[in-house]
Length: 161
Length: 185
Image 1 (cartoon, each protein chain N blue to C red):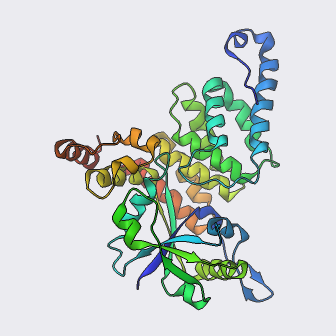
Image 2 (tube, one colour):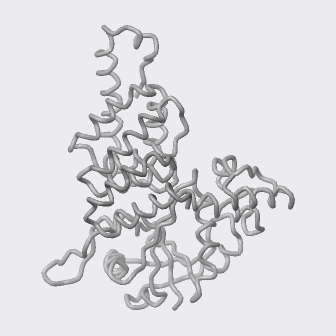
Image 3 (cartoon, rainbow over the protein chains, first blue to last red):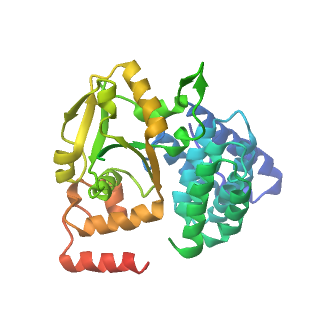
């Protein structure tokens, strides 16, 4: 799968939709292509490498595209969860705010697997700004051990442990 | 009670036990964490007092590409015997040679039915724990400062992040690393 260049065209408002469509298609294909994959914690994969390179390439522009993908109920929750884990681990300043936003949004997903991935991503990102979103997620979390895991992440963000 | 440890992904073990016609059961996703190769499943012996637990966890963490959470389940060492599962003390493949020699067990010659029975039993009786990424990082730095891990056998990508590349650090550098971790710098 080839990733198309983006920077020169992004300066022109009239071409944005084309870029968005191309980018959305690239992200969407990636998320669908790995359905059924077995991911291991801490181990890079074709998916994690390609995803992080795409997010780096599109930077803040990846936010809206990924938000749409995360709304798509036909995408595997296991894949979405894996993506969120890597959003927390990857090092890229240009996409940082977009990734933080996606992780916070992931906490309210209807899928517990996705909520878990969001919580873990926030644990890796270790940004105290996410604390209030975690507090809200803990209040509404119905699964006891997932709630406990979120509380552990919140303790880390607020008390540094 | 001594136990066996298997790495898992906690989200696959969540929820209440499904009940299939009144028989205790477990979520099917659990089986993804009990994936066998040549009908063998890798596990680690944890002593009664869990004195070797952290050492095993760090040995396993050192095999990974990045700092990540560690999710694991421990269950009674006697559980495999209940299902007539053969256990063999075989060399593990981590950067900790003592752990590899002493505490690694393969559950071998497994049948599909035995794996399912094991999953159902572990689901109801096992203890699931998560260590968060930041804590893993801290403990890994400490483990590298000890003599437990052979730096040349740590995952290459992780070794770069840890600042250990092949040859062991000097005692002075290891002490500085441990102080940095201790005081969060």
